[in-house]
View 1 (cartoon, rainbow, N blue to C red):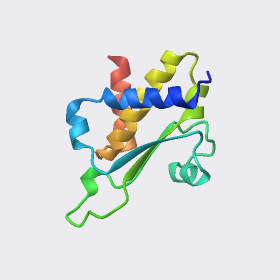
View 2: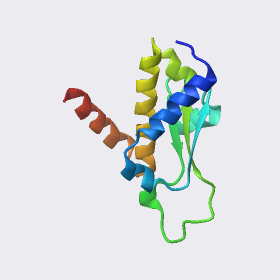
View 3: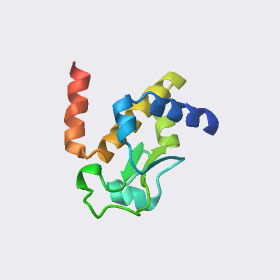
View 4: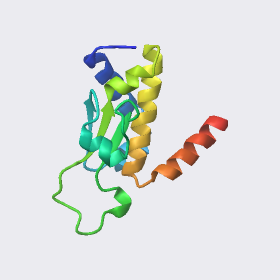
Length: 128
C-alpha cells in the first residue's frame, strides 16, 4: 500500500489527536516526526538489521528517568517510519490502525514503559 506523504502525515496527526486527554496533558518536550526509513544509526540503536522491521522509534529520556537537573535539553524524538508501515498494510484503514499502534507504543516509551512491558500489554490486549 503506497500513499502520499501528506495523507500519511494527516493520519499521524489524527492518531495524535485521538490520544486520551490525560496523555496529551503530560507530554513534555517531545517532537513526533515522519521519516521514510530509519537511518543506520537508528537501526543500530534498535538492534535491528533491516529498516523494514522498525515502524517507529523513541529517542530521548523517559519521564520516569528525569531528575531535578533535567532541563534545557533538546526535545525527545518519536520517529514514525512511513515506508515500513505502508509495506505491512493493504489499505488506508490498515495504515491508520498501524500508525495509531505505533504512536501509542512509542509514547509509552516516553512515559517510561520498557519494550518487555509493552509486549506483555499488547499481547493481553490482543487476547481480550
